[in-house]
Image 1 (cartoon, rainbow, N blue to C red):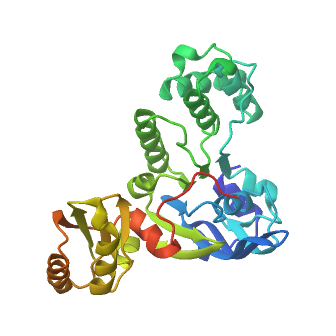
Image 2 (spheres, helix red, strand yellow):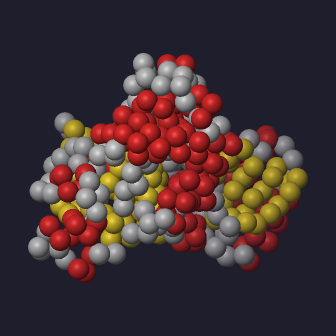
Length: 333
């Protein structure tokens, strides 16, 4: 089913939301005493890449599972291209594709056989399924291993094949949950290029990732999720700007001065400092004039600096400021 056919089927389709690929209003999911998702509101524009970022247990995967009809919300509502995920489940499923965190391939079949079967299940003719399988094996650099059984594939090869399977038929909305986990740097960059190509050819991408660099490189907009809530949302630049126009970086000559430097920095700059490396202190710098006061205070405290620099805040610092977590963990509920 195409997006236009889905719109036609629903006579109450609201033309005002045709620019939204997905949306959620007050979305809730409860597991026992844990509100994994607690009143989430999202508006995901079509035609770009939207990232969900957050620490371990933030609720990112649970949100994806509700938007893709894999689990039912306990409260609130969600739509995909205007189609309600509760009442239009089959329509929604024909508008999306999903790649989860674990491989969905058959270990006893070859890569070529797996992709061909997926193509047949998606309604392609045998010749078209075979052709598409060969194209994807070539694109993901698996052609040389096309006839090997999956049990002989490395972890990275399995991940690439799983991603290839989700792209046999390009859906209007593609959900990628940790799409590059376990891939080597070269293959990760290759995947980034594939994701960008999918957007250029008409798809919208929603992804979760543990790699902050990945979100920075790919996402047009990012929702920062923490404890089941959206704590910030915007472009990468907007999120960085929210914690200060710049970040001051102090490289210490000696690690023993770290604790005292943190205290002085927080006092003078009136901002939360962090130490991403043993001898490095960083802090948002809202007022450039205060840097002079800080450097004088450090000198009076006999703290020697190896280097001082100023740069745009990183997404690592955004996470620390918004969630108290210095980096994104690997898997969440």
